[in-house]
Structure formats: structure tokens, C-alpha cells
Length: 340
Image 1: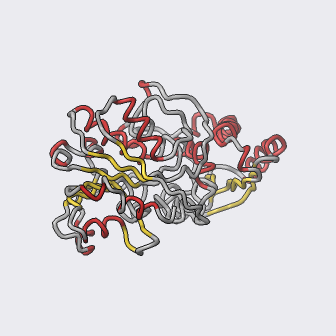
Image 2: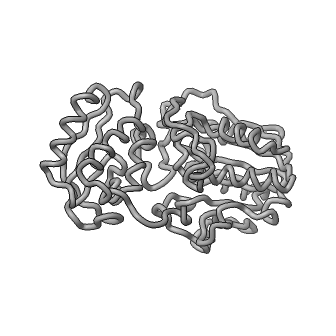
């Protein structure tokens, strides 16, 4: 995706825009000019507003860490740019207000989705388009079409409105198989928004990993998106999903699991799934999050055949095996992200 931002900057329609809003984080870095997109737009005097999703502008904040103020970004020298957090303590902050959108003649969306409905950037983009549709606003949208690092495979079923939330948009399956541009076009059609969308593509064949810059703190490498649709289910349990380690979502475990229990269920599952993935028993100590500083017994998931791997099905089988051991003690109680 080496020339993606350059293709935007030199787009004839985009060059005419004078009041631009930008939704992005650190993935929006131009490897040609060695600058962030927000710097390029600020330097040419057209960036009016910068919208920042969960995890902060540089993916420096952990999951569910709300940030009201944006003073930490004042040192970036973005003079005259209004910086807005779309992840504050109040649920209404998840969508930009009409006042912050109505004076823009263009909005640029440059985020790296990872192909799963639990990933909150998906909802953030939808909420932005929803505000535009509901208020009949029609700035030009320019979407940088970053590829889906989980590929075009689809897993799961569309979530019902009863269970929909910020971490699960109604109608989206667990793993949706769409790129950022395809998601935006789908959202526009679904909302019947009267918005022109220009999808900016890059025909240059890149050797860079599609997530060479991590979009959030716990998506550290190219393996994570391939297992995220299944392994993220462990957030709903009393097991560590590997946050606080260098291998989030690959490492799963708990001080309450015994070594014998781990050996037993991993051996059984590996007999049927070894062609696609192996569960390797181990011990690990999270440095933060669940079970900080405690020794956890669990496993690391190793992908063997990523092209034919069904993450959701595999992880559901693992969850069921552990539920047979722990029963109701497995499930996390209480409210989760924004009360869902």
C-alpha cells in the first residue's frame, strides 16, 4: 500500500477540497514523504478536524481506555486543527456530532480494519456515516482502501439487533471479508446515505505487510487478524486472552486451569485440528490486564494452514472443551464495553 496516501493527495477531486475532516490513527503514514496524512493536510492548510478512534492516534492506549482530552497531541504542531476523541467516557461520544461535520466539504477515512465485527473501528466508521445519513449531510468521502488482513473469508452469522452493540453491528457476521472501501460502500447503501464516496486504491504491488503498522495495541502482527474472529471470544470468559503478553489472542489461559486439564483438552482438539492449527500447552504471566503477575496455565495457538483455517469454529470448540471442565465459572459476569 506504498502509494495509497499519494494517490489521495494527487486525486483531482480531493485537491479541490478546503475544509477536510480526517478519521485515522497511526496506520495513516505515507512511506513516500515519510509523514503522516494529518501532517500533510495540516501543512497545506486544509485539515480542519481530526477524529481519533479507540486506542488513540498512535495506538498507545489499551482496550476500553477512554480519553477525553487530546492535549497530548498539541505538541504535533497541528495549528488550527480541532482534534476530537471518538472514545470518551460517554456513549454518545462514539459518534461525531452534527456540529463537527456540517462545516466540512470532505471527510477522509483512513483506518485499518482487521475484518471482524468486534473490532471497534468498524462501528466508528458506521456511526460517522449514520450521522451523515440521519442529518442529510453530504460532504465528499474519500476512503483509503486498505486491504483486509484477514482476507475475504466469511465466518459466523449476522448478529441480531437484540445483541447488537458497539462491539457487534447488527447484520455483520463475525468475520465479514470486506476491505475498508467495501465496508464503507456497504454502510452507505445500508443507510441510504446521500454521500459520494471515492475509494482510493493502490495498484502498486507491495511487499509490506498489510498491517506493517499495528492498528491497535493487541493486533501486533499478521497472524492476529487470522485468529481474531475466534479467539476474541475469550474476552467473554474468565480466562486471559493474552493481553499483557507479546502474543495477545494467541495465548489463552488462567491460574484456575491445571496443567493436566490443559494437556487433556489440547491433545483431544489437536487430533482433529492438527492439519490447520496446533494448541501448544504452556505457562505464561501477563504483565497487565487479567491475572496480572500471576502464572497462567494454557496454550498458544499456532497456525499451520492459514488459508483453510476457520478461526471461529476452532475457537468455539476450544471454548466448549473448557466449559465442560469449568461450567458457569468460565463465563465473565457483568457489563462490558459501554454496558453491552
